[in-house]
Image 1 (tube, rainbow, N blue to C red):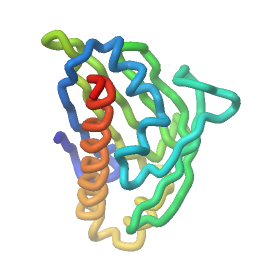
Image 2: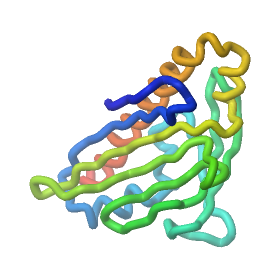
Image 3: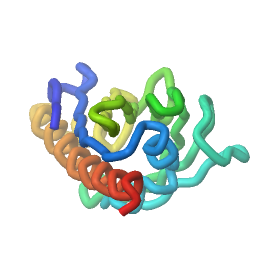
Image 4: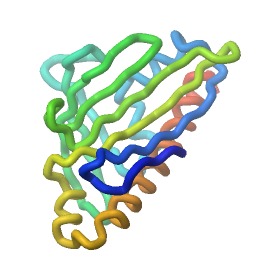
Length: 169
């Protein structure tokens, strides 16, 4: 797991990675299928494409329905901001120019398979996280660290799930 600063203004990130015994072209359909993401997450409950979109294309939008004991229930609209088949898939939550968070899968060929990296960068746009920080500004770093730890747990579970699917297990 990789983490950066715990101050929201610094755009803190968390990332996890795994190696998958399948070439990037086989992994791509799995990581770019948003319908597969909720299966391993305790927070992301469901997703659906919007505006008639049926798959990952640059500019496509989707709703994500979330639940978290500390933050409650909420729905977001995400925008696909990166879509390079076999290489990268990313989306921004809320406004692509001022996101709540930006999520990204990066695929790299390695040793006959794929090195898959999953990363999130938190933004400063108003959210449950910014509300928690506004209530307890003296605890910002602790709040952000706890949020990143929770996201890392779900990201690790998601990577494990996607790995099994891509490897055909």
